Image (cartoon, rainbow, N blue to C red; front, top):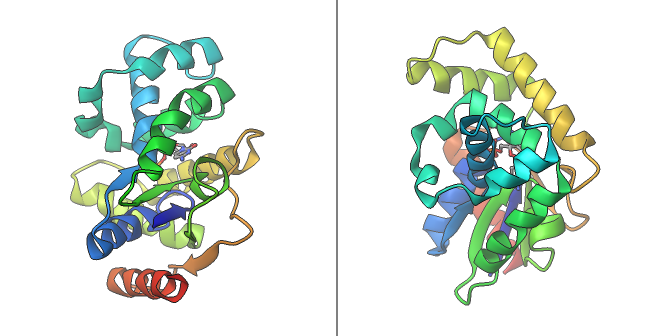
Length: 205
Ligand code: C5P
């Protein structure tokens, strides 16, 4: 069983994907981390993330970079959303993601285009959404807990900019697959969102 979990930043898709993988005993790939690694590598190389040649060169990042805590920062998220607009970057990361999806035991992948591009054959497609206010508030509390000096205003502006880039890009924009089930987590607690996702998967199996 392939489970595709797509949605915007801080919608709760990562939490849901991890919990589904645990519940159903499936391997999990956070595909955003790959784009974050490309963005970070491009930065470390002194490249321009808006330049397709520089961004493509960064796709050969060392495997160890995926463990760098810096990838979780807002800065890395912003860089990721810039390198991810380039079709050559998306192509370079496609094979790795597709191979993960089609392994014999099944898999859970979360990202922006799993149900539409990476694994349109997925048996279960979830599209996780939440209001921009709810997402900004969550991200704000998360950042504060990590001791980061951030404001709610800056996070809201950053989320809105990333949403626009992810939805507006020509190649693999953030969009729900026609057969995706939408889960709105704005008013849900963590455990409620997870329960809703498990129920959605059970209903489709
Ligand atoms: O999910 P996360 O916030 O880690 O993703 C960071 C950025 O990487 C997103 O804003 C998006 O631009 C890009 N991304 C993507 N396709 C994916 C996963 C992430 O374009 N499958």
